[in-house]
Image (cartoon, rainbow, N blue to C red; front, top):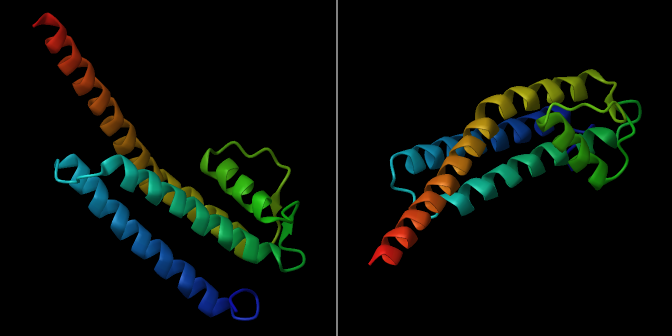
Length: 144
């Protein structure tokens, strides 16, 4: 089992998951930008949700240790805290108290700024391009 019983293994698994996810995000983003990704919206949305899930799971594992988080008790709390951290809102109702959770928050902020922002930007650009193409093709058909 991962968690405070095996901290080194837990950090290694988290690092490997984030490294793999980062690589996949970069490949998919590059594919979208080069126009060679067949299902860009589905892939990017899936990878963003997967990144949120990985961070939420890590927060939930840390919260199982006494004194590491204040206010994080359930899986939904972990997802909520991940979303609040991702959006840089920080309501203050859930607080990382331990050094491990604080390091994880710093990692998530950096990860979000680089990878999630790039994926979300590429996703929104793709959706806007698809909508624009659809509108133009509809407009051309109406003129005929």
